[in-house]
Image 1 (cartoon, one colour):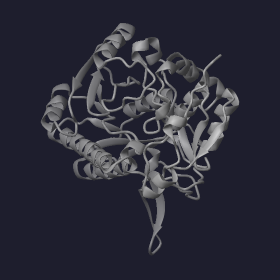
Image 2: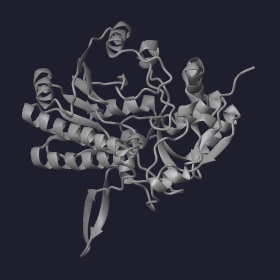
Image 3: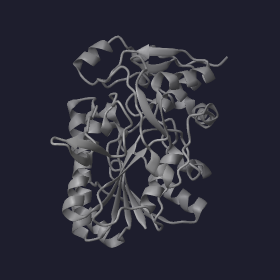
Image 4: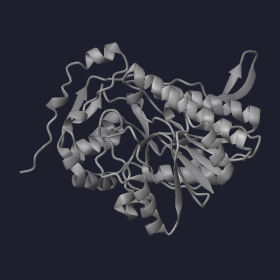
Length: 389
């Protein structure tokens, strides 16, 4: 049996040790195309399509520690999937308030979870959704290994250490801090932890959520929460020029939402033994340059590509070579970017495009004052949706 801690401290679980994609609405994320059902409705829908009961509890993992400990004692889960974090890099850079909130919520939640597992005296395996961004997005000069890297120390001593952190936002910094907390609690208290360094998610449905419209996943299209490929697909379907930041030379890792769910299942079913170091998987299917992804979408939809000033403080061009051999060796057959697979997303976009607010498409969070100044000419009211004749 496993349960899942979802963003902004939603909790649900089901009576199997396999957790598949079943996303819960985030309380501070208003911009989704989709008619997102209330949690209780989604739980009922899952029971109707699967015949399985899913219990739901609403508590704040970052604040309601005693309730979290008691919940773990009562349910005795084999695995806990930790999604209970503010999940957007741009949102984390928006203001001093969102920076502080992201650190308070994410780091406190992860620390509370580790402490709660220890205090409950239940040997639960923690599966944490991290990010590829812990490695940074500079050019490393070689393949990024899965979590640990071989080094030669002074005097010729060889060692295998945690890969150096190089975060590019406050959000990414909290994931780096999470990783250090997991290293400590594994060493100090023998916690069993798997950290999933995930790439950029795209797509809207898994084989489970597509069974009932009430189970549909979020589809954020705005500059704060919309992931780059989903944003491009939405913009292409709406006839809006694609919003590529800078040169588009940023290389990123991508993964379809179905593979995200599959990777979580694999991680749950392959936990580290007590005393083993934190297990780390690179949870991606492939890497692509942003401008190449934009061209894929532009070629399919016929829209233009619009190079915007970059709101982020990052390298304009980078290479990214990433190992994902662990998941592949455990049975993952990754879904890669293919124009045919865009059809599913485009169908969803066309169905819900009446809900799009074009003033939310351009970036609204800037990494620093210089970036804000460079983007000052961007007018959110200038974005126009193509009206079909």
